[in-house]
Structure formats: structure tokens, C-alpha cells
Length: 258
Figure 1 (cartoon, rainbow, N blue to C red):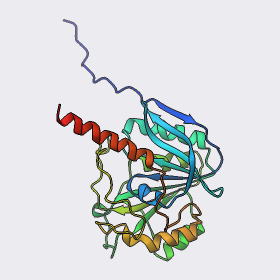
Figure 2 (figure 1 turned 180 degrees about the vertical axis):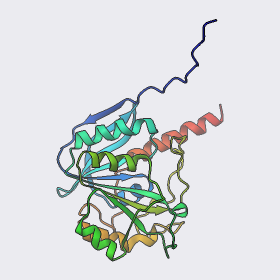
Figure 3 (figure 1 turned 90 degrees about the horizontal axis):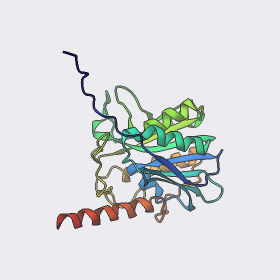
């Protein structure tokens, strides 16, 4: 009797990544991701959308130019399946041809492992190359290096890794949050947003972000963040994501009564 081959699980189809619009290559690029990105985006004045990126027809990225000849600003949803990360990041980096990259995301401070607990959760960093500015911020204890055995994963890790492989000087800044982390590969929680659209120093129910006003201002001064204004609260870089969330909430509510 002939042996039969074991059944194998069918692979998920490759994610279809589509870039719509025009991007000016060769500029400094700032990537804003997730809760930290959404909060900082309130202080970012940008021009009209230059491009957007779709995965299987759904928008996950908005690319816009900051005012006053500043960097290209990239606003990214954090709810992206693992299988889509590499094609998404590869598409973005190829189109942007960035001169340098700053990646800003969040880390879950309650689960971050340290030998000696911090008095308050710090901003952490990883960089593809040393710099005098980062060394000065570390010496002033404004930044702390991200250290093992902790791991980073997901979109921020993909951006830092592929930028480094492409010889793009890249710095990842991780802002603490107490919000429960999303599953690595979903299902994501599209109907929930971070608590309160507040700029740094504003009323913050969990208290984590409001403590970071001073170190964020020092980052702005030392790293030359011309694109971020702490007092500004009307930035709309993530307006497209808010529209998507509202549509999803309406859909979920209507399904409850079917």
C-alpha cells in the first residue's frame, strides 16, 4: 500500500502592498507608530497627504511632508499582520530612500525587565550607529539604552532592522506605556484607541505619558526636532486612522443587532 504524504497547512497568501501617490526620496524620515506616534502626532504640522500605503486594499500608512522643509513624516498603524511586515517595510524604504530614519514607538513598561527598577519609566533607545547627540542624552539620563533580555518585535523592529541592512542611519525611540500590548499577529482591537488625545503634559489617565514632557522637550532640542511643537494639539497625521476606527465601530455596532 502506497504511503500518503502528510497533509500540510496551506500558507496564507502573500500580502498585497500598494503604494498610492508620490514620495520625494532622499530626505530625513520620521516614522510614528502606535500610541506614542499618535500622541506625538498632535504636535506635528504637516502638509496634505503625499502618499498612502494599502495592504490588501486597506490603508495602513499615511506619508506626509512636515511644514518648513522638515522631514518626511510617516504615520503608521500598529495593527499589521506579521506576514505583511517585510513587504510593507521594504516597499516604504525603497520609495523613501531615506537619508536617515527616526522611528518612534511604544514599549510596555510593566513588563520591561531591569536589574534595578527605574524611579519612573524612561524613554529607551536603540541605534544602528553611535552619535554624539545620543551619547549626550544618555549621559544626562534623558535616554536609556534598550537592553537584553528584553526583545522588540513587530513593525518598529522591522523598520530598524531593514533600515540598518540598507545602510540607513536609524534610531528607534521607545516611549513607555501601560496599555496592554496587542497580540503579535492579531486579532487586533481596532475599536479601542489610547486614552485621551492629549499632547505631552496634558491630562493623562494612566500618568505615564504626562511625565515625559521634560525629556521629550530635551529630545527635541538635542536632536533638532523641528517637526514637533509640544504646545500644538491639532496635528491630524492620524486622522485617516480615526476615520477607519469610527467606521469599524459602526460596523460592529450594527452587527450586534443583526
